[in-house]
Image (cartoon, rainbow, N blue to C red; front, side, top):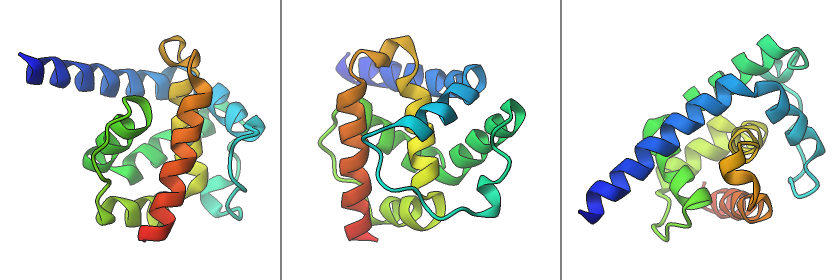
Length: 140
């Protein structure tokens, strides 16, 4: 029964994450730019250019989501939003730091934080996001 509950929660979060990307991509980018708890942004790349318009922001978030991948994405969501204590595998940390990048990591997290279900604990989720980034930098 407990495992069914965990699976149901994860399915809900993954659906919510997809909905967040589609429902508020502009807000996610704006929050990423204003986030005082965010680490220094990456140097601009061709992927980061032109993300000020809504279709570009949507594409950027989808691109970021695809870079993370389902396995690592699920682990990061569990760690940031559910406080799971499982270790993040080195392969996911390497992917986060070397493929996904800090801008994508921040934008994806902010897209979920902006959802009403998560906004009440935004400071905790941002702290968790920063902790995971620093941890993964050391692992990668």
